[in-house]
Length: 206
Image 1 (cartoon, rainbow, N blue to C red):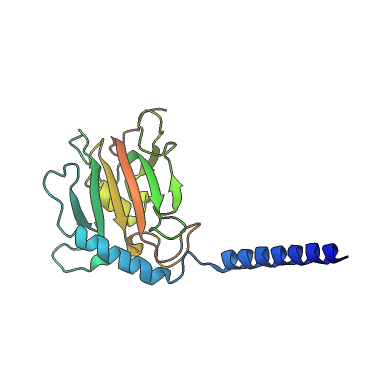
Image 2 (image 1 turned 120 degrees about the vertical axis):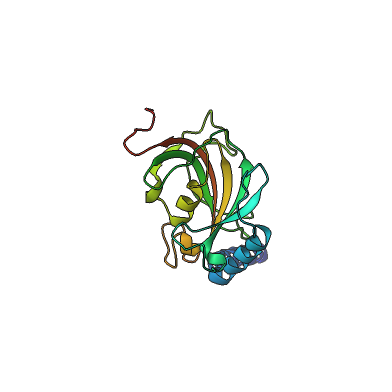
């Protein structure tokens, strides 16, 4: 009988610990204080990417681009810029226009958190952990159909360019949640532009 009660006590303890662990996990909010954390993250990025785009954006260059919708003659805050880092410089010489169509490989992350130290991936066309153009199949878009921050960057990119973009929520999805993206999210994009088709032209067949 003593052995029975001892086993029962151990079992009850295990159940209580498991319940407590599940409760803590359930109540843990990886997106707590999300608006302020995103604002602080963006401020740090802005301090590292505070220069305007150089004439030749070589690998390693860091700079900012004012939203294409805004007047460059006026002063704007951090949330009006896309912050860019060149991961790979392409060989193309032309950039797309607003009404053009393009193809690009992409990956989208949220800012780093305890659960996702590199940022949670919320969308991507990548099939590999790192960019491999021989394997990845780029997605096609109209330049004017994507979020404002991506359009802004595309207007300055050339074929073959591979950039990392930090896009403020105001140039992304704003204050409302969209799918796996909480409101007020700064988005971290990797974009590899592979093709441009001018108005009236078609992208190459797949």
